Length: 392
Image (cartoon, rainbow, N blue to C red; front, top):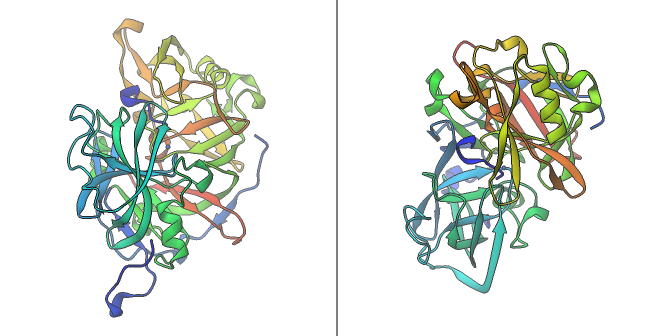
């Protein structure tokens, strides 16, 4: 999870009639590559349960650890699970605390996220999301949480790859796959939009995808690094042209991050984008803490049309950002008719790659599937299809 706030598995006993692997919808962080078009008809979700959308900023859903129920953010930008510890102060942690009913590993850990820190004790216990259980899941009982203190969510289930784990443990979804609890080694994410009346339809599908939440074919892009879900970004276009006037100005690598509210671009790329939006300009700098040390903020005219919305290009295909999502709100201090943008500039290093962090601002327009083996069965991929929103 690399969010900027307000710029922000062992198999449990199942009934014999329902013991087959299944997909479940659960309520609820470069060089040009060739993409593949995939027919959506092969993938069918079996159940749909709503995910809570809190002001298009946080999407979370219920799960249990031991005998406690928690509100989890499902995060492709991290790999660990954590919930509040009884020691966590109330101004940091909301809701239920972990009862410490599981097995303590007698270890502590400190984890840095995009905009906060989590410190706590390492345990093992049964972690369950809508009937899918990782029985001996390693997780953190957080005594300190500066990450979610302003959120209705009080825990995270990380969905990135094992090398990201600060507890050196197998991620929750990986355990479900290994134990044969899901139909396919993939999960699909749909984020609704409050203004469109689709916020209450948000969901994550563990083991498949929901054809009612997207239209058209999927476009598959290979993961270039099994750390975050990182794919090659060909370029960004504004007004039908390369932002900044040349492809290399915005080409790079993008971590597709379901736990991030915004888009964080390398500083040079962000400058190229807003130099291409008529009236776009720097507003200021801010320090947010965590992995994202500082960001450059941008503003642009609130009446900017869809023509000048940034369009990300993955595998040769364009994926536009909706004007509703680029706009973070009016910013009178920048001048009459100016709005703060939901794209920021910050240089983030990921194992030697300077990466983009592409979050909810993008995901609301594009139903996204994260597959551990891809259609080839040999490498992880991320696939995009047009999300069903108002007017789509």
